[in-house]
Length: 252
Image (cartoon, rainbow, N blue to C red; front, side, top):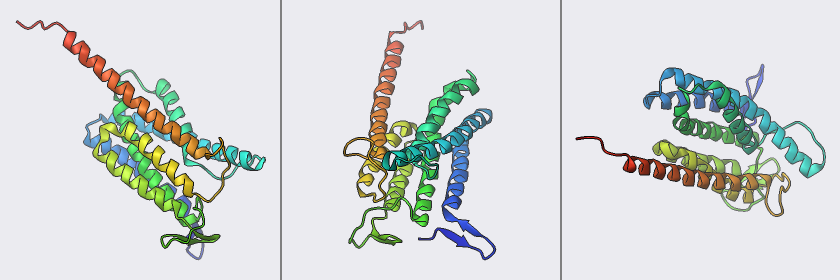
């Protein structure tokens, strides 16, 4: 592993470096997507402000969720570590609260379009975060004798950080190609992929329900949310098409 870059006069934590790179590139990605898809600059900036504030809440939520997981496992509540899904839940909740109070009626119609671009940007940032986990040697997998296993400080293990990085790269490419479907591609694809990867994880974080880890529980909810979104959006589209068909044709 490569947890630190030693420059002689200072040692740089590579996990932090990857997180910073991921967040910076996510902001650039969002601005790029809104620009090429002709979202007005003032609206793009407003949604970016909401996202940045939501990211701060998400960061705190990621720490809180990990502390709760540790409490479930050990019985001791202590601040330390982060979990992505906890951050995602807190960040999404904060986004909709801030959306209600910060976004004007003129800007609200851009919600679905900007939500797609936000999620694509999150996937990009998450990819670099998992590379950071690999460099730091955290979020490792179970002991394995397979040739693709890697040597961690505590044994030859599944590189589950890289498994998830590959998953995220695939999701990013799919979402980038089918931008308008991102809001359900992402929760379904990531939920299924993360649920499966959890079977290979070797860092015990307790059991939220019998037989499944906390992350698997939230992964199931993500898949359900993605399916519900598909149903709701298709239902809404059907209603709109029906209204158009029933609108009287006033042309002579």
